[in-house]
Length: 186
Image (cartoon, rainbow, N blue to C red):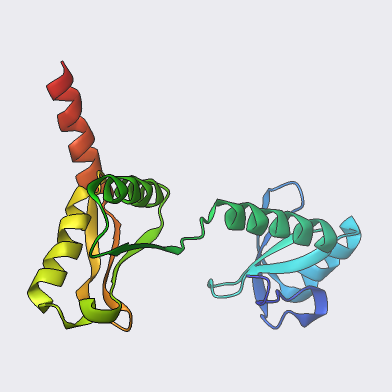
């Protein structure tokens, strides 16, 4: 939003404007010259707020104050945006049940925080020659251990290091799962 520069004072091209005064009252539709004169009389700037409206909407306000308020709003919006990463969990053919449970809980924690999780079955040496169906099933069994509702973002497929699949959280299914567990506990 910072890139779209608003027109102020003599930069405004419209012949008529709907003008809002500095106290918020509507001055109505005025010719550009009258609107500029009203802004000058108030010792403030005339800023074209909505150039696409018919007629365009302009406000009489101090430009510095207006820009400050606008930047504050943009910062507040940016602060609410949560950055999502793709976290990676790696298992091997010989990974034990307890370690798989630990990694599954860690993946569930990442999913609950809104991150995507890339689960990878790492193959080295002779494991690369094993049957593909067995290896895919091994990774899918690991995914079933994750105690958080998820949806498949990228299905399990061959990757440079073995097999990998990407999952992301499914809020609707998770809410349903939590609701069912509350009913079971009663």
